[in-house]
Length: 235
Length: 180
Image 1 (cartoon, each protein chain N blue to C red):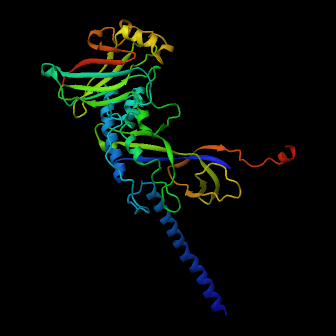
Image 2 (cartoon, rainbow over the protein chains, first blue to last red):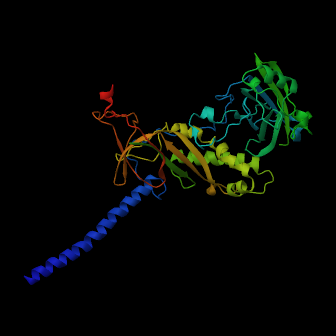
Image 3 (cartoon, one colour):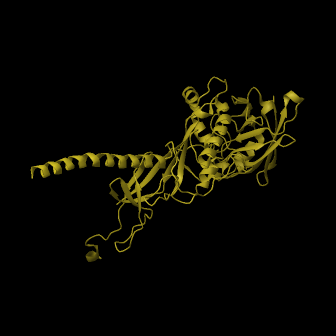
């Protein structure tokens, strides 16, 4: 009797001792599984569902000729020629050109207050674009006539890179005042804000270099405008 | 009954293995190298953290670099990656996300680490069972007679409840029938 009781107590004790590591082993397995699911583990678990949708290489959403997105305004075709100062100002092919400008109300696309963005990528990076120059050194964007914001004359920002993405020049393009006055006083939605508060001659970017940064703009409010400008870089 | 939005923060770095993660890693790094030059005009900095500490405007790089990955986000077809229900399937719909550069270096690609936070569509939080949330994707109120389709999802690292709204459930107000 006593021997039986002793054995039973021993087994219970052993049993507990055996069970404990098994329980521990199970929970450890769970933890490993969880870690893998978040993708931060050192090994990858076999997917439990059919793989897909299959990823494909996708260019930056900046790479598009029409950068209008969901903005409205007077159509503007932007033609920028890039020439190389180190090659007798000949056309520079395969240069990467980024442009960005504000909308009719004077706002840039950027993260909003909540910090979230919609996955409708055509409207996320509106009025920002990237093109590569052709054999004539030309890039063309379809956009809208920019508005203005307080303290600056109307402008388009330009960043020129060589074909491998090395920065060559960051600059801005100015607009003829007479055309700005026409757009800002007669066209919707610009006319609700009226004319710009800063003239090119008083602008802290353009004042000392306007001759190099002034664009040629042709067209009309009804037909849209075409901006042409040449930028010299050292490539 | 409460409506919630779940948030999942997916971190991608040099160690990430899936093809989608590698595309996001490579293209966001390439874009980072290009856009970094806009703010590093005097070539004084080589990491994002140092540059943004010195030049606050460089915080805009989060947004600017995100342009490189929006095409990949679209390929997810509005389903949050990695987070599976207890049946082992991804199921959480999203249409909002935020791209962040955790840190990066123009000298060493291995130091490039980014995060994408996915915010789920509003969900109905029905119950909590152990470590699992019982939720329904259908936030329209069901009558008591309807069987509501539900999902069980485990609370896990890098997943959080981002927002909560107590809903006024469309149940009959006692006594209203008598008054009308």
